[in-house]
Amino acid sequence: QVQLVESGGGLVQAGGSLRLSCSASGAAFRFIPMGWYRQAPGKQQRELVATITSSLSTNYADSVKGRFTISRDNPRNTVYLQMNSLKPEDTAVYYCNARIFSKDYWGQGTQVTVSS
Image (cartoon, rainbow, N blue to C red; front, side, top):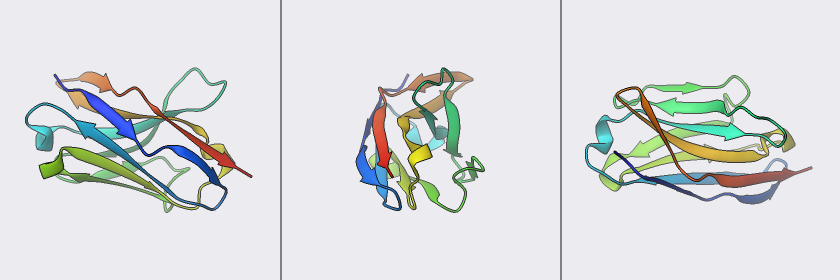
């Protein structure tokens, strides 16, 4: 089992940057595939933003490629999402995800608001 706590959200102008952090409790963090998802206002589904495996292979949604970077610091049990060139359509609640034996664990979410 793992507990996830996100931080780093906030209000930023279009074109600005934010870095989200997700701290994970529990052992064996370095073996756990991690990801960031988001849920935009008025949408019922969370959408994948980026994922990173234990071998540091990454995957991004087309809408964020070239602007967002996911990374992990295993000794600190932390995964990051660096978001640059933010757009108003990036406004959402961002959730950290850990997948362990096909079971998903989620953080409480952090709000990102991009003003135009």
